[in-house]
Length: 93
Image 1 (spheres, rainbow, N blue to C red):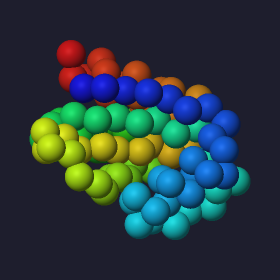
Image 2: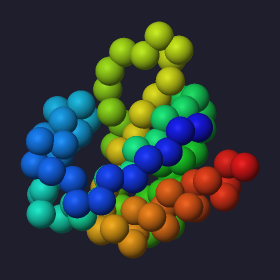
Image 3: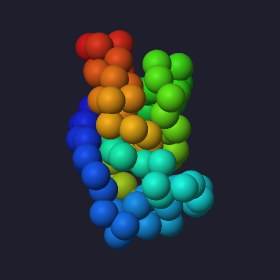
């Protein structure tokens, strides 16, 4: 599983996430974006863990990946996104 966190994402980055997810959200509410990529089963579990762990929204990023990997964006304030990503990593070790 690959994980990255973008703090203070630019408007262009937020636009990419909105287009790839098909979900419209209030950009001002997004202080950070956690990006998580892995197998489908792991990403479904990761989305569930993220949304249960803190006040974040997890959305699937649509696109084509030859390895059939799934990507999630975890959206919220910086501390909540960091907490959600940490919870995902701890639970999937």
